[in-house]
Image (tube, rainbow, N blue to C red; front, side, top):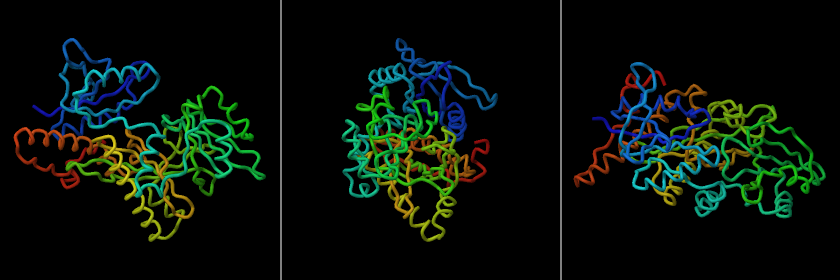
Length: 389
């Protein structure tokens, strides 16, 4: 009997699953490693009989089917909150099934993450100045210190609700741009500091927003860019930087998210186009990779074991690296879009390898023997890799 891995998801409107393509690739990869992957939501759980009506991918027929299964020994949490109803469902599920072993876990909102990372001297030099929005006066004082400011929902994802404020000549007015809660690009407007809260009326600024020092992100064509790094646990339970790629936003957008219309480019290509020399590019990459590992290790010390994090970084015109955001449930599509399929496959495979590591470690502890090491897939023949991914 194969080892089971349950993927915990949430239904979107119409009972659709947001990442079904990813789950298919995860299932195919799992079969190669002897892991039976199935997908379920809190709605699929039969509490009375302690069983799940799970969704499983049949590679032979290339189709999804339903079957009843027991609770898996380990759960990969991919839940993304879309609305209060989903939030209540997943909260009830976690409170009821506290004994389940989770491969991943929710961390905290952007403000809490910022405060925790500020405790680490290896990370603080790379953190933009950040405050929790309280009132207009506080915002005006912050705007006087920083010519560019980003206002972000502290629990938002995908670029939703992000506003960029750039001080105009004279310092009394600002160019306001951004995206609304539905990711729609907001037209640029000239505003005074006093007008900003009114423009964002109904967005719940006091309780929901952070204000952050803006890092210059514009390329020569005016489009903004940043970098998405994926840091994951490997088959030996160690943190590794799986990869890092650049993202370039569409025209007139203040964010570079792929879901918001951004495009992907390799990190090396983007850095080389900006800084020219191989030496400078290599130095920036090494700094970014070291920072990514420090961030993952520090957050794990605070929250407990988890398998991966998406880390958004910026590099300013001088080459200094800045942390923009940490995402505990990252997409890996940026690597597919750059054509880096080897990294893309590793990004899909590593959560399964880490799950196997945890299960083997638990079994060895019960048997009071040392766990054997899982041979990394990267050391196995390329011919064994899933060419359909």
